[in-house]
Image 1 (tube, rainbow, N blue to C red):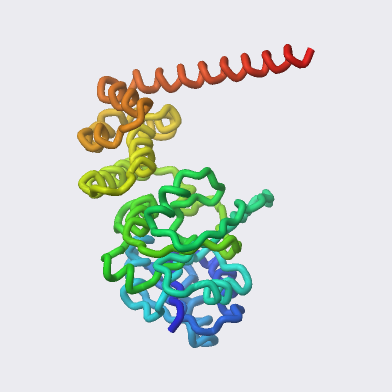
Image 2: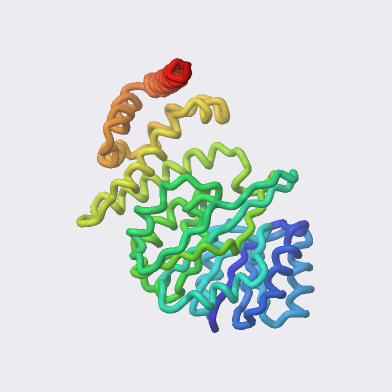
Length: 333
């Protein structure tokens, strides 16, 4: 079998038909759909059973609610396809997405494609510019693109197809019980991938809706990001002979962002709890850029000093921009 599509499902009766309809109309027929019903309490299971009766590609696994990561892991373990694609149950694939994926895969560990965001409030948005490149290693791919600003973030797991044997060989599963699972999974997936191809086609549609996991404000999300930073730094600090500058930039940012003023407003003062969560030796090790070293020192002394420093940075940047604009205007006179 060519590809297994893994869909974690939890209380999405309003969106599930749209997701499944996008699959059953695909021109490529060599696929299976593994629907992992993760303890839904609404009408999601009834919808799945309706589609299963109509379409032989669809199978259902029902389990107690263990979260998105656990549902994805269940799908990985039972999948039969040579390649795996993760599809969230409130999103959908574009027409002919599977055929385009089929036509572009040879023996890559990762095939990466473009996606677009769909806003329920009617907001319109152009997708990110497409990229075409092949014969990359996974780590070269990460270093080149991970921190490039994009609307549909690089870290999102759903923007790639994964060779199943490569995932199993390297024991690449999702960390269960945490938010930000993609932030942890994607660097590891890139590190172990030997061959990567990128195509510019926009194949995935990501629905932005209120109440979804990624849009919910929870203090757990704050501490889980620190857990991700700790796990990434624990592993990669010991790795030699690879360029870790981009990754270290990302990890350092995950550490100090916990103390930012916007998180203070969202969650209240969590400074004491944050300090206990951070692996400070790792934070120091990954702070290889001058700005990050300054921030490490300030946060280790007092988070309040760090927040004052960020405000000062913003003020200096604002003054500088006003100065540049003023100089331009004078030069035009």
